[in-house]
Structure formats: C-alpha cells, structure tokens
Length: 113
Length: 111
Image (cartoon, rainbow over the protein chains, first blue to last red):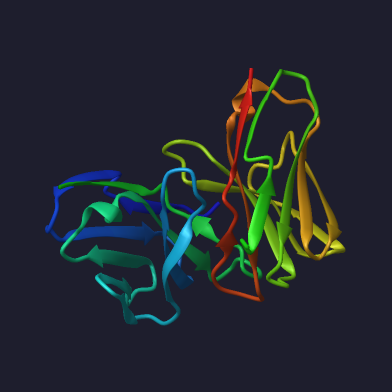
C-alpha cells in the first residue's frame, strides 16, 4: 500500500523557535493535508493543499505542496506552548478512489516555555 | 454540539467479548470512516463507507466488521476482542473528496 514518510518523529523546542516538518511519498498525491492532534482528542485539520507548488498559511502555520507532488512540508513560526501535540500529514494518492487518505506516522512536538 | 460523536469514549473489556463502537455525525456527509491509532503508527484505515449501501475494507479489516445503519451512523464491531486490538479508534466523515472530520476517539483496552 501507499506509504508516507514523516519526519522528524519528535521535536523538543523552546518557546519562540520555528519548527519545520515534512512528509515524502514514493507515489504522486493530488491532495496534501496537515492535521494536529491534542491529547484525548481527534485530529483537527490545519491546512489543506490541492495544487503542486501551492503555499498556504494559517496564522503562524505555513504548508507547501511539493512541485513533484510527492512531498509536503509544514512550518510553525514563533512556537508557543499550545502548539504542543502530534502533527500528521495525510495525502490522497492519485490512484486511490474517492477520498481515502494515507496518513504519516506523526511528529510529536513538545514546546518548553 | 460536536459534529462527529463517538460512544463510548473509553471501554475496557475482556478477551473474547463482542464490542460495538458507535459513531454519529450531523454534518450530512455521505462518507464515513473508521481508523485505528497505535503509538508510532499513525492512523490506519479499518473500513469505509461512501453511502448507506456501500461498505469497503480498509488496510486492516481482519477481526472487525461494520454496519452503516443510516447516513448519520456508522458502527464498528469487534466480534471477539483480542489484546492486540487495544488502541484508539477514530471515526471520520467527509464530503466527496478532500479532508475528513474526525470524532474525539474511543480508547479501547482489551485485557
């Protein structure tokens, strides 16, 4: 099946630092999504990307759909303690019917005040 | 009120018992999904349904079954629970394509 490689698996940073994480795939995707999951909750959508090269921001978050359509990155600027959580990338492979998504393994982010 | 609700939120059961996890949505979406989450493994698709009469297996359907009782309801059953089915279970919904909305999850422990 499809695989998404998400890195890093975990990050420990100081408040105020910038964060970058990415996902890569061996297959071409036509949608890239970034979700955040907080403890005890389900994943919540942060950013959705639908075109190669697309760069989209949501507050301090910025994500890009890679030109090759096989990767995406998420940046968080000036991190704050409430950014703590698990960040998942998800993509819709070109050959998958409907809206089935493939998820990365997640990046666990810890922000020290 | 939450758009996607799951019951129960937590459940502890014994090996061999039958368990049903329920999901309801008020978003009016046709498509519903069940995922399993284990530490370090992300979210893996168990079953999905594109409408009431359409049920499809995901990547890890063995040991699970589902029922789509109505557009708004999608239930996941474990016919005979085993310890390695201990995990977080999430229901999600979506429109025709694109992103999915997730419920709050059910934490299932099989002893």
